[in-house]
Length: 561
Image 1 (cartoon, helix red, strand yellow):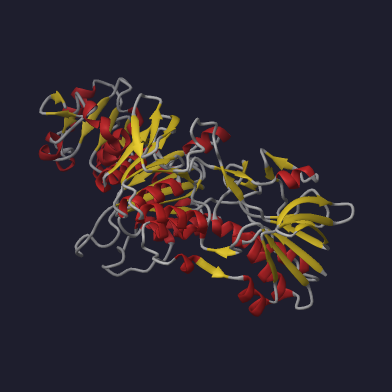
Image 2 (cartoon, helix red, strand yellow):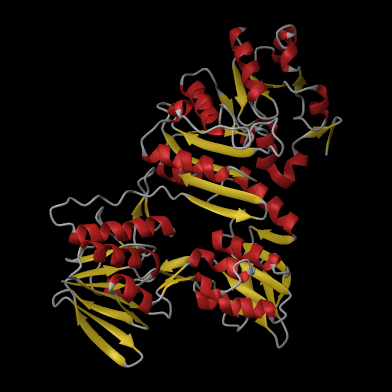
């Protein structure tokens, strides 16, 4: 049996390696258009920063090592340009001319190419992408050859990592992002923490603005933004997104959606004996059901493996390729940011009802040195407690919490079930009530109706309600909402008549610093017959939601700051 794999790296090499382990007699040919067939593309920014000193360390395998270990026939610089599904033949351009090969099974993993928007000046020699080892080496050479100023166009995962890497290498860095904030899939209240960290690193963020042109000069380029800003640059990193590299497949009749190949849950395309995986395929979102590419290494690797199982499984029923949760993580200076499942935008687009819960627990026991908050939010179905998505940011422990929640989502656990997870505990590592357990507790109260929430987005809507701030007077003085009544939660029972008089029949919006004390106050208020809601995540979330604009919302000493 001849299996041809088009494209290496994650999905393609996983399919090829698994196929060999399943069938020692198969002829397995891997055709790669580039000069590396197996490299750590997620490590590219860290070579740019110098943290991974040698580019060779990014190369995981070579054609020779793959031949020796797995008897794979890897052919570099083979660019597949056509497929004939009738004769089961592919055509490829090589340095020696065009070649044709027949296949019994064809696996398409061509990946995605960097988007190049119609931006005047984008053809400047100082503009680079960061998709291959060659890209990283070329950028690193610019850095070590005296580049002092960099502009990164796009603040997605790669853009933010590239910006941090360039700053780590000593360059001044500006980041330009058309979306309202860096890391667009991230929720607004966590994105403000990313912006704070970028500022702390010395990186200038231009959010909500487009780059209009690049003027190339003999000594330096100038990037012109839509707001009139002009930024000098010795190098420009283009990272505004990717597009599936599938023209050859579509021309052969592979069904696509917005350029990405449509596959079923076994990785099969619309053509017989043709499978596909990776960045160039459509994945079904596990939460919303939306069809979209998921450009992540983990799903690509796993899908490649499962495709080989489908091709060569024989009597063994192959496992299905699961719908994607999109679990992802990124480092931004001292901050770690991670997410899984759906965000607000995708839930809104899908018309799915949700409630958002915010928590700010420490990553380990508060009495152990180094305790710091994990800013955690989760979107929950308010009727049945299904976990729809979660995001977190912090200096430590973020990966653990998001991975646990992603596992719970894959296993079908509901948010209240998180209470019962038996997670490891020792003061340097966690708390007896871990952040994930606490999320489950808040979610259970919400689903059961013991807790009702209001949100930072409603802080300036002028609703006819009494705002009750149950923090201490000292905390209250550091910033509070206009017109708020301040009664510490420990005094609330004795001063309930003050609340009744001030409310005058209106609903009560109660808040504290993080949501714990306001929940206590909420239960007291409910017991006394008030229409009460508690601010999700407290003033910590409110400050994160408004970010640099928070001083326009909070009052200090009776005056808007």
